[in-house]
Image (cartoon, rainbow, N blue to C red; front, side, top):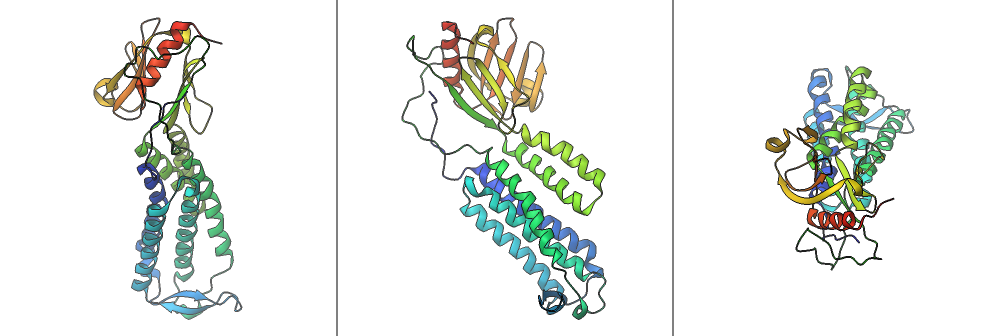
Length: 320
């Protein structure tokens, strides 16, 4: 049994995840223009003949090309952000990766050219851009797993979290995702920046960015589950690390509003005297008092249903 609420057709977090790769691609393109501006010809070569060995056969003024490239990324990003759905988030990331890479490679081909008519753009650029898209697409797909699917239910939430009515032979479970859009965006930004650094260097910076970004992204959204095993909190994307409070260790479950700073000293997994918590945002939290007296709190929506079910299952003495 899982009491869920209707989610909007497009979650705000999904829109943020959709816009993020285009923002990063625009930043990369802008940085390349700023660093290379004095080394670029005006006009720059912008069209190349496939039958002529990739030699330039079309040109655009440097200022106009800078504006066109930026407008292309903004317009494409706006379109994806307005129309995106969870199942195609990977397409937005692939599009941003391909477009941003191709624009930067085109600028690189024009570097230090005395005359843009002699610029050559190898077909390998398309392969590099496609490779970036191929790396970005799985990142977008993984991020889509952090956005809960739209669900519907007519089952009312319990008015009290003291107990949930449950027959002796009935089996029940509850699950809900808990996460932070800000932490997700930061983790994704570090990962994408690390992937870009693998191509542009230096590699120690890429390694540092990935070491910070990958774990941060993995822990930015957690799945909270209450069932006959007790309370389980685990990352959506990976099986570990996992926090579990078995039913025989549950003294009582309640709901409390939590402020990350004043109650736990910050966000993430926090340890304080007599209590621990996984705090990804402020607001409603499921709080479990363990048999030894310590408390564990996790910020999650619909915590009243979780607390009521956990109290019921603990009172029945279920377990595995």
